[in-house]
Length: 314
Ligand code: NAD
Image 1 (tube, helix red, strand yellow):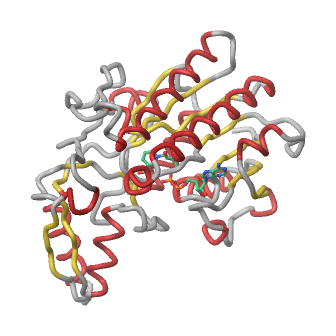
Image 2 (cartoon, rainbow, N blue to C red; image 1 turned 180 degrees about the vertical axis):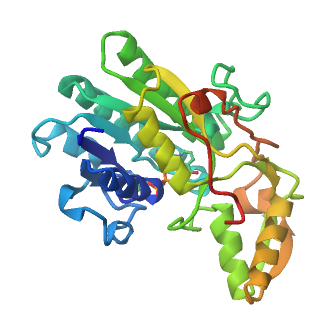
């Protein structure tokens, strides 16, 4: 494919940094925007083709409105957001406002510059009681506005509305990727992400804390597969103005995940730690709700030529 100039917001983040690596390896020129609030420049160390990469440090919305980004930009991958259930529960308004502010600036930028746009949405838009498997055309269901946990999903859902409306009213190519749990190298455990928490505890001989009874199930996808999907969806032949689920589709209960991490750790000669249970209320406060199971229907993204390749044990 012809080399292009691509913009990645949230480039120093977990998924963003893997995407940057991938785009550079394919020969593209990449400009990254990141305020390093959760991302870090270390994630972008030793990039292949690093001479074709430039990072602008600062608030993405501000940078997009400034004159800093000159020249032709063919496509924008919008990943900058305040992420993580623990973080959202701590600061529901600030995280939702950041996410909306960023996406509005990105939409205006993409329209003005005639750039294709991929918006990183989330499985959180399926809300509290999804019909399984989650299909892109399904109704979304959130709790009452007192349940702060859903502010992130609501902001992402509103992003989708704004992006699809911009596309309908004459904008350029818009793709919405609803990401399900990504895992892999570089993910931080700070904001409650379960796999890094378990791996760190198993390696150090600490406690693998399972919230609730552990029968809740999630599907995990290696971040390198996630990055490949984003590249494919925006730069490949996928139909525009569509929503695509992106993730793994094999549900694993959190209790089984803890045992699996422990077994793998011991097989590697590491201590393995102890599995303990902790009530949700104790972690996230009273009235906290989690969807029991979340499984994507991957029909659309498979039809666009992508499937997950890297398994959970790997
Ligand atoms: P991350 O926190 O590692 O990445 C987000 C990046 O955005 C960080 O580098 C952060 O510093 C940056 N950022 C935040 N606000 C910014 C701002 N105002 N200006 C500039 N940069 C800003 O998280 P991630 O897991 O890599 O998530 C990337 C995207 O994917 C997010 O939009 C997230 O909502 C979405 N997503 C992730 C997952 C997952 O499993 N990791 C699941 C669903 C959706």
